[in-house]
Image (cartoon, rainbow, N blue to C red; front, side):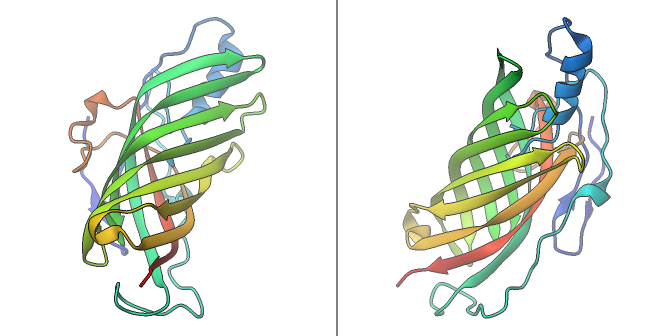
Length: 228
């Protein structure tokens, strides 16, 4: 199911999400709670929504990150100083594997991510989540961004790690860019992102969302620097 998307002030696309159940029917009460909280894991990452019904989330839950940082300067690879990075991304999770380890659930899976804003392109990688009894979770992921930054194209490794808060229904993380190639060979960067699960939508890097087990949207911010 696709829903029409509309453009936000920062040029990102606000969209919505669907979920699919793959959990065991045993111990329904505790596993239902785990299914709900894993829906908001990111990016932000595996951001897996594992319910048999839709779980729409309000777009007001997506928290924009600061677009300005005092003392930063520069507007391209040739400028000294740092570049302010801001934008959004939408990811699709698939190939997810669940494993019960004591009271916790370990989730591993793959992601395809469409990035808008300063980082304009596609990210592909994998993520590992640990979901705890209280509904909170930790996660980390790593993959390759392929696209354009400040007019320069190439690839670069993007890693992140973060937490999920069941009280706010938000996943937040810190990300790092390094080991680039071609026009991004001298790029370094770091920042944060925050977001939650959305309904399914077609994106340039994912295409038809029918193959997604869950989708997730977040806004990001940070600083970049092209070394001499």
